Image (tube, rainbow, N blue to C red):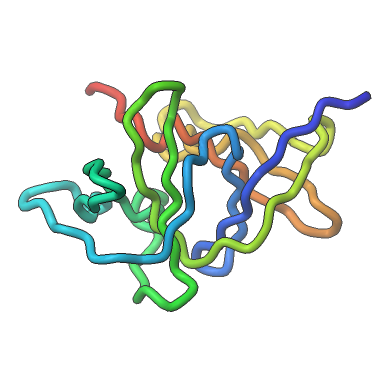
Length: 146
C-alpha cells in the first residue's frame, strides 16, 4: 500500500498550492488585521483568534507574488509549523478542497541552494491532469537566521 498524504489546495494568483493538513489548525474567513509598524512587507499584522494573538502573513508576498485585493473567497489558513508551536495565519486567495496524493505522485524538485524561495516547496504533486506546488510550511514560517 503506497503511503498517502492529504493536502489542502489553496489558490494564489490562479496557481494551486498544497499545504499538508498535518500543519493546519483552522481555516477562517478574512477579518480585520491589526498592522504592526516597521515589519516585513509580507507580514500583514496580527489577529485575535479566540483570545490568542496570531501573526498573519501574505503567502503571495512571501512567495514573491504581487499583492491582490482580498475577495469574499480570501481565507486565512491557521497553521502550526511544528507540534506545540505558536499558530501563524497565511492569507490565500481561495481554499478549494482536500486532495490525497500517493507518495509516488509527488516529484521532489532540485533547486539552487542559494534560492531562498526554493526551500518553500517540498515538490510538485500530480493530481489528475493538474500539478500542485506542495509547500513546506516550516520553511515558510521559520525564518533562517542570517
